[in-house]
Image 1 (cartoon, rainbow, N blue to C red):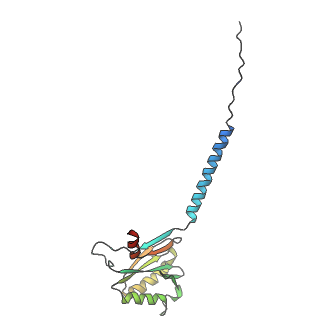
Image 2: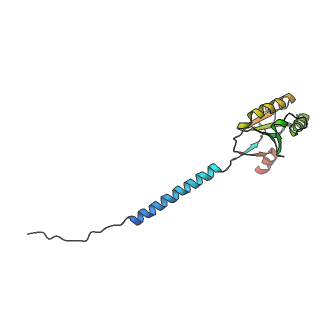
Image 3: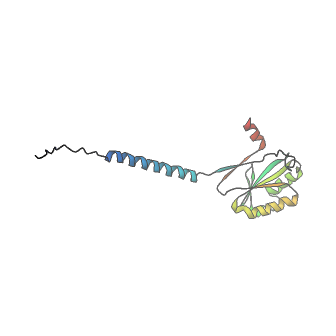
Amino acid sequence: MRRRSSSRPLIEIELFPFLSILACTIGTLILLIIVMTTQLFDSQREVTILAKTENNEEGKNRSKTPRYIECRNDGIIIHPSQEFVTKNDIESSNSALKKLLNEVKQNSDKEYLIVAIRPDGIEVFKKIRDLIEQKGIDIGYEPIDKDWTLKIETPEASKNLSR
């Protein structure tokens, strides 16, 4: 006897809708990653320079207030007034830098200078450092990246923020 073949209908499962949803989800995630990394790399970073007093007694500038200068390729910026002095005017006798150096020299027991140095401002920094050392002014320096936005914060402002 021959077996009877049963012809059951085959059940077919269509995966196209599931794969379509999966492909859209992956595409959306890739787009989200691209947008986030683009924003991360395009946005300028901000660096804050804050002079902190040292807790030990060896700190030379422990009780002094810092004044800030930013060295760039084309000159310097005196902070927080944002006064720009060109590279050619740095050694001029009536420049804002000379006025600042004279003020700090007169108050050398209360003030010192912190110089922020951009990568392209090293030559300018060498000139500035020589001028500062000739006056006998205490100096500190901080290298910063070329794309960073410099934000100067005084110790008084940081004390107010922590309260």
